Amino acid sequence: MLRLLKQYFPIRNILFIIFEGSVIFGSVCLSFMILTRFDLSLVDLTLFLKIGLITFICQTCLYYNDLYDFEIAVSIPEASIRLLQALGVTSIALAIIYFLFPIVIIDQKIFILSIIFLFVFIIGWRVVYIWILNKGFFNESIILMGSTSLALDIIDTIENTIDCGYKIALLIPDSEKDEIDESIKNKIPVVYNKNNLCATALEMDVKKIVVALKEKRGSFPTKELLNCRTEGLEVLEGSSFYEMLTGKLLVTTINPSWLIFSEGFRKSKFKTFIKRLEDIILSLIMLVLLSPVLALTAILIKIDSRGPVLFSQDRVGQNKKEYMMHKFRSMVVDAEKKTGPVWAQADDDRITRVGRVIRKFRIDELPQLWDVLLGKMSMVGPRPERKYFTDELEKQVPYYTERFKVKPGLTGWAQVSYGYGATLEDTIEKLNYDLFYIKNLSIPMDIVIILRTVKTVLFGKGAR
Image 1 (tube, rainbow, N blue to C red):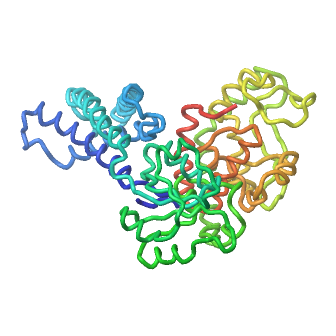
Image 2: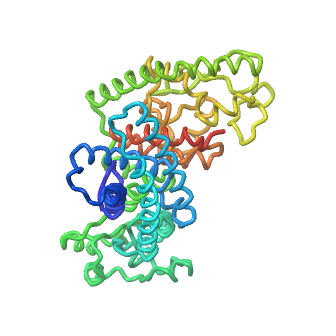
Image 3: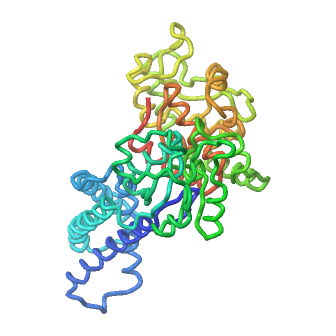
C-alpha cells in the first residue's frame, strides 16, 4: 500500500497508471517503427518528447473520462465507449496544440496507426487487469475485529470497492451475543475467540489488524493486541483505517478522544500564508481569463429575466463570522418569498432558463472569485451555508461546528467527492468529507481538489 494525501492506495493501482502510460508510449513508438521500417537513424530525443506529449494528453483524457475510476469503468463495454471518447478528445486537443506549435507535430499516418494500436492494447490490458481485480489477486489480507456499525461500514466498503486492495481474511465480532448477517458469513470466516490472535494472524499471513470494537471496560483484548504489535504486526484503530480507505471520516461513529489523539489539524503561519497566496494568485488569474465568460453571463441573465445580475446572500464563514457571498442570479426574483429558506431541489421551478445552464457548469459560482480575492473565502474549503441552516445543523449533526475552523471554499473535497446535497443525510455525508479535508489540509490536496473540480465542471456533474 502507498499512502498519498493521507489515503492508502494499492501499489498495483499506481503501477497500473504507470504501465498504461508505457502502453500508450509504446504504441506510438511501435507505429513509428513499423511505418519507418525500423529505421533507427530517425530516432532522436525530439521524437521521444513528441511521443511523451501524446502520452500525457492521452492519459489526461483517460482520467477526465473516468477510465481510472473502476466503480464507473469496470465493464469492458463501458470502458470501450469511454476510451473512444477519450481518444477523440485526445485527437482534438493534439490538433489544437499542433496548430499552435507546429514543431511538435508527428506524422499523421503514425498518429492514426497509434490510435488503432491504443484502442486494441488498452482494452486488452484492461480486460486482464479487471480480471485480476475481480479475482482479488494481490489484495492485502486483514483481520477485522468488531461488529459495530463502523466495522460493518468497513466490510461494506471493502466488499463494494473493486480496487480497494484489501480483503478481510477473518472477522472477530465483539462478543458471541452479536449476530452476524448470513450474507457476511458466506463471504468472510467468522470466529469469536480472541485468544491466540497473534498466532492466528501469523498463520494466515496477515500483517494488519483493524480494531473496530465497542469501548467496553474490561473486555478490550489489550494483551492480545499488544502481543501482535510487539511481534511486528500493524494494529490500526477502525476510524483511522476507514479514513485512509475512503478519504472521509464517519462523524456518527468517531468519538472526541479519537479526534484529539489522531494525526492532523496542523496549522502554521507558513501554511496559512501559502494558502492565502494560492488564493490571491488563482483568483486573479481566473478573473482575468474568465472575464469574457463573466460579461456574457451577465448579459444573458439580464435578457432572460427581470432583476439584478448578481445575487447576494449571507453566509457563515471562518470562526462563524458572517459575510455576504455573491453569485450570478440563477433563480427568479424573490424566489424564497413563498417558501422561505430552502435548499435547491432537482427540477426546481424557481430556476430560470439561463440559470439551469450556469448552475450545471458552476458558472453561477464565478463571482465568488472576488470574495476569494478579498479574503472572505478560499479557493478550497467547505462550502459556506446560511446561518438559517447552520444553526439547525449544529444541533443535529455531530462535529458540524468544526467546519468553521477554516475559510469556506469556492470548491471543496466534499463537492468533488459527493456532489450536491439537499437532505440531512447528505449534509452528514458531506461533513464526513469536509472534516477529512480540515484534518489533512495541505497545498498538494488543494491542487488535487482543483483538478478534480475542473473535471466536475467540464461534465456538469452534481449541480442543481
